[in-house]
Length: 75
Image (cartoon, rainbow, N blue to C red; front, top):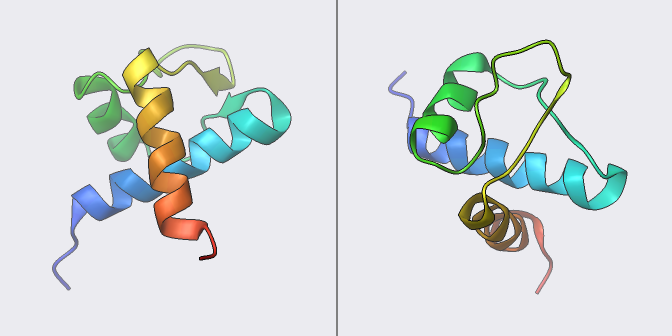
């Protein structure tokens, strides 16, 4: 199967934002390849390290909320 990594990254960013909005932290329990791609795009801070959460950039937080509403919100 041909996988669209952009769609995976959008879903991961949206779910990271959900964690941040509901729990106050964006837990980094997602695929490391997706996390690295989000970091390279400047949407999250470097996910490598001992902490169990990741920080958003300003752009990443806004994009995460937008994608969450788009992908998972009800009309």
